[in-house]
Length: 568
Image 1 (cartoon, rainbow, N blue to C red):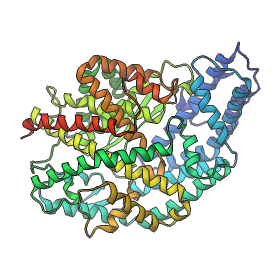
Image 2 (image 1 turned 180 degrees about the horizontal axis):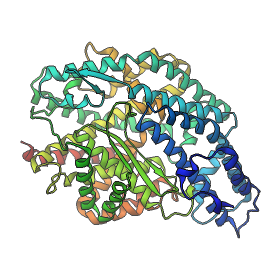
Image 3 (image 1 turned 135 degrees about the vertical axis):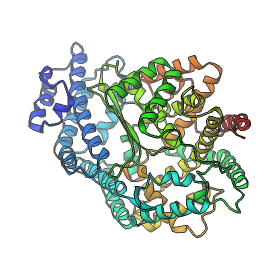
Image 4 (image 1 turned 30 degrees about the vertical axis):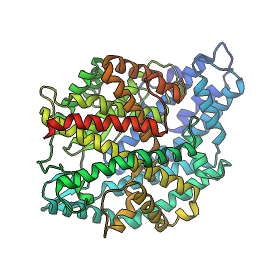
């Protein structure tokens, strides 16, 4: 029966539940034993991958154009009418496999995951999960509509970001204040959205029989290898090791700029007040430059990226009505990734495409695995795949015909390493804030309490920048971090992955081909081994401690020192 499924998820996107349901019923009713479990899993994988790709294609459609009402209706129909039915049907198949006692080869970790997913399933949560997705889409719409008028031209908030690199301080400040003023105009709307999200998430946990949403989310995100206590330990290590190093970098920036205090609009300008780096004029140049970097890192990675370019699997430029952020999703039935981002012509765009390119390589490298459940990669390692590319690609920024001259490349690398170090304290703020929210949900329902907690954490970790007379702007920073609204607890992954990526990069300085080969082997394992084993396969270790952070910080500072003479 599975053979009669459409070969393309694009066709499958238009199916309704009565068309889909018989395939799940056949799998549920089929006899399951050691002789046919492989075929049964392969058939389950086929329908599951079509469903997942159909959802992702609907999601892509509403993010590339948040004003497309027809796409939104199709997305809403899918999450309301298809998704809940699929989740209920998937639950029956999970229970069937678990009850069989069968353990197919290479399926130990997927089985562990399926047991956890089955444990938190509750039919009353299906409409709530759909509601959560639609609330997330509303946040995208709010952010996508934000624009300012700059010198008579309407520009998006992201298109205003390059203005923060201008050498004239009054211009930077004006752009920063106009941007934040526009964002604050949506403060009440986001507060209202926040309350709805918290209520939905609280009910999800309650229905699953768990004391709070954090416990629910921990299982939902399949976190077996570390605990909330490990997260707190990581925050403390960042406070001890990274915060002083970043404070030192901020002080060096302040002195070079010759200002009394460092203000929020002073963080992206070149500290020597040179004109901003503009690595490309259009997304075609961005694509070509990054393609050459991937080719230099590894020819096979370069070939993967060329497939994406050739098949139109990139949407890179920013425009009004486009959702914020950047992502790489996968179309598993087609065995292809898709990259979405908002490039505006700055160096961070190069880093973003390198990052999302790393995610895309994961999709290609796991395509050989036979079952969909084996391709569910731990998010913490998925981010190692992406963050490693930022660091491995840095040395090729000045390739012949590339983005920069050698001097410009040194400048870009220094800025990136400084931003990378500064990210860890910011990550600690975001993660610690979310732990507080879901341990104290009754308090967090009042956004003013969220403002207060965010400010407290900001002052603890983000030392060195003067926010005097900007208390409201600082306190509402949590509203501008889409992960907090849309993907709760999905942020510690970036911090842990950055630490893993530093280890991959360190290995590459001794043996570049060996480090890239280990990286690719680790990617190819997909979700077939536990998280610590994925790190080990890549030549790294999953770590939360001072020592691992100190080694990474020392490597970054040493590299900055080595690049400084070229940056003079």
